[in-house]
Length: 246
Ligand SMILES: NC(=O)c1ccc[n+]([C@@H]2O[C@H](COP(=O)([O-])OP(=O)(O)OC[C@H]3O[C@@H](n4cnc5c(N)ncnc54)[C@H](OP(=O)(O)O)[C@@H]3O)[C@@H](O)[C@H]2O)c1
Image 1 (cartoon, rainbow, N blue to C red):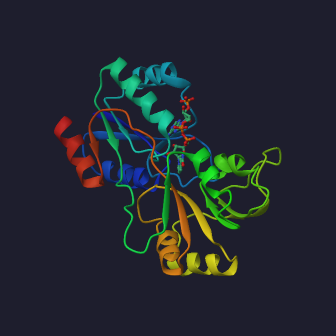
Image 2: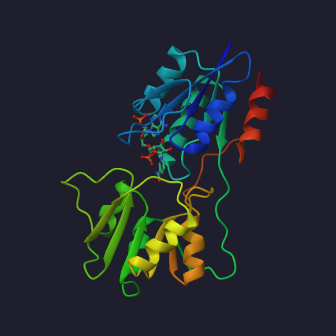
């Protein structure tokens, strides 16, 4: 029996864990960081919480006799991806990065592409009044000083009361989001600009389509770099990699 650790926190990781569970001779353990109060827990074996940096992950891989790691974390969860690269190198086991394709700008999109969240905040000043902020709870404080802008902040869990957040309205909801829903939000709140990470995938793409339809600008945060190594962009290729390595 071989054992694969799937680093998760994404819908793709949950789908991958469900697929791996059907392969004879392989046991999958899915790992979540434990950020959300009621996570969508993948089927099968699941562990929740950080490992304690690279050293903690190295110990975990050894203690649990992990044979392979598939890093299927969110494209913006950069720390865990680099930790996984360092830890698997130290333990000398194969690692695969599941990296879903980024969204590409198409005709009609009014994107302002920026390198990071701080640059997104800078890009808003002087050119936005009512902003739909969809970058997650952990990034809200980067926009708190933009006092002349009203924000609709969509998050899974509400920010803690001691977090500095911008002025506006917090909307707690979890994807996938339908196009009608996104169109309605942009119209109802008279949104002129969306801030989005370039997450890729279908679950949160409808807001980008709605923005295109309504001529709303999108400040699009580019992805952070990924560690070197093997990458796939779909579940079938991840399964094939695992079977090749068995
Ligand atoms: N960043 C986003 O925009 C985003 C969006 C949707 C979902 N997520 C998911 O939310 C989780 C946290 O994201 P993040 O951006 O805060 O991550 P991060 O900055 O890359 O990681 C910070 C720390 O969180 C722990 N961690 C992260 N992912 C983990 C996992 N799958 N299993 C166990 N520990 C994990 C690790 O702690 P230790 O050092 O203690 O091991 C890591 O050093 C990720 O699993 C990611 O897939 C993130």
